[in-house]
Image (cartoon, rainbow, N blue to C red; front, side, top):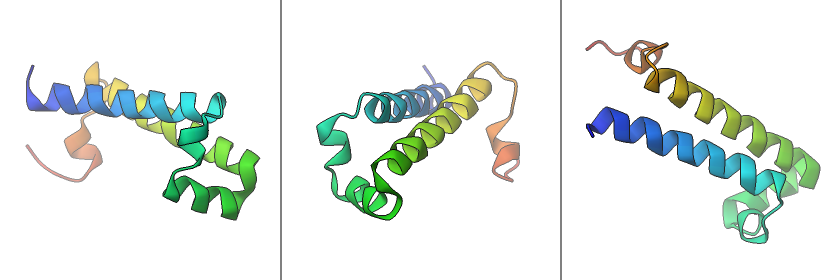
Length: 80
């Protein structure tokens, strides 16, 4: 497995973790220092929506790069 494939799979996993943590309201997920800040600013429901949207975005972008629909380097403004 090359570095790019590993990175794409890693970001898919992070995105999935974010969606599942928010959807199932895992205590350790919302009790982390950074999540507490987001929850304080947006409220519990707002934080759930925020983490679900971020997770779906991460997963989708990584998955589309994994199946070669998009080129991450072009998305980030880098050339090969």
